[in-house]
Amino acid sequence: MAPRLIYAADIWLASGSSALSMGMTVLLLVADAWLLVWVCRKSGLSWVYQGFAVIMLLWAYPVANFMSAFNVQIVGVFVLATFAFAAMAFAKGSKGLWLSIAIAATAGFTMANGILAGFLLAPLAFILGRPGKAIATAAIGGAAIIGVYLLLATGSEDVLCTDVYDTQKAQSYLSLQSIGSMLGYLGVYLGAPIARIVFRTASFTDATLIVTGVLGYTGLLVGAFLSLRALFDPQQRQRPIVGFLMALLAFLVGTAAVTAYGRGVECPVYSAATSRYGTSADMFWMTIVLLVGALPLVDRPWARQIPAIGTLLFGLVIAASQPFIVKAMIVSPGLSPVATGKSGEQFLGGGHQADRVGARTAILSSTLDIAALRVIMLEPDATTLNTFDFLRRSRLAPFHPEWAALLGKPMPAGFNLRDRSCSGAVGLPVALPDGGWRIGGMLRGTASQFDHIVAVNSAGLVAGYAMRSPGRSFGEAAMNTNPGWQGHVNGRLGGGSVAVYAFDPDEKTACRFGQAGLPSV
Image 1 (tube, rainbow, N blue to C red):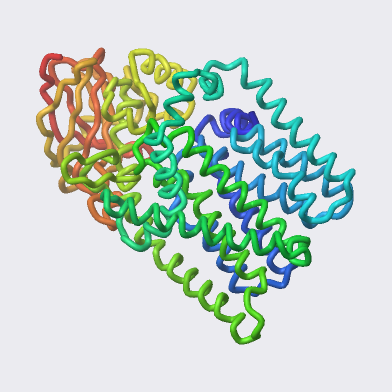
Image 2 (cartoon, helix red, strand yellow):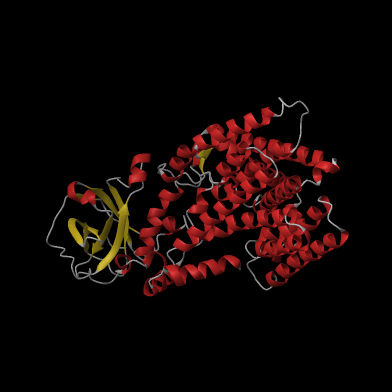
């Protein structure tokens, strides 16, 4: 519910361009970084730990959360949980109690796992030594959050909890094979950020997935050891930062466990390393490191510097991996981001951003290219085209710029399509089973100065859109300079042949560089 307010504001204020939603994602992470720096400083943790927290929160590994406005909820729920636990741990009296309940409630209405924040408030209050009345209030507040969530969820056919009580499904989930799948998913989920650095790859083989799982469970065992040590030391567990970090760690592990339960049986294990889970997995390792800094694990003063030195080195390695992570996410691997078949490798977002080019031109051209659209949606079908047409008529989302909503219309006044010509190549168009065509080719000479391409039919109407192909190297991807191009022609507007133009919507200049003969569908 809460993210929908942001989506609605984006439609009202930014024409559905996602600018406001994406900006909110960044602001949430900056706010979380500020909070953790404040917590560390208030608790006496050195600049090393403060810097490490910032590096982990702003690491590029969870890049998927910066590629889709929808993922503001994924970032938001973890930020809100962090603030809820900080309010309980550091704000005094009833003010902190009620503030933590209010923030936890917002987390619960941001994403399903947010109800875990409400569930953990009472245990956190107990650990911190809060009065019995405060513990009871936190328990009632947490129960209310869960109760209201479930009450609202029972009216929806889409929520997973409608199937939880299915006897056959419950029995299949309790089989040894299913439990093993869940445990494997959990390990890969938690271990993926470290494995990404260790193997320096955008893909994993079966062997590296096993190592990834081992890394995840190593982190889990370290977190459990630190938490148990703190729990059995009343003086330490009642320190605000220790209680805060234990609650945050429990929330992160609980989220990973719930995700493994929901997806571990029906989804391949490598999907646990998808970058959208990176925000929580990164915070998992960040929380463990901060807990190491917060607890006096050794008595000798000189020995206490060893964790700080290790944290500094760890942070530098993470920071140094930024270019590799960014490159892995924006450079086209030349393979599908799903499974690559007999090679045994699975790309986990390596071509995610690159593969969206085909989806975008299919949307702009209202063409049902199922293979291209599956990069961004689960089951594209004929009704999907109605959504594209509605968005175009309303000038929302990708259709907000004037040039993007020209399908079926002539080019705007000011574009003289016969004035200029430039060189380029048009490959053989491919007819799509559900109507329309894929087109592509190369840009040369003056045509390579343009980023936008349109296909115009014999009636002078825009019949399709194309864009530059994804970069094959970091330089091509960052500067958008791949001379190749790819796109789609609408099935209703194409037929016969189309002229292909490179154009600049800002300068109102265009040049024709090719002709595409369209085969019958």
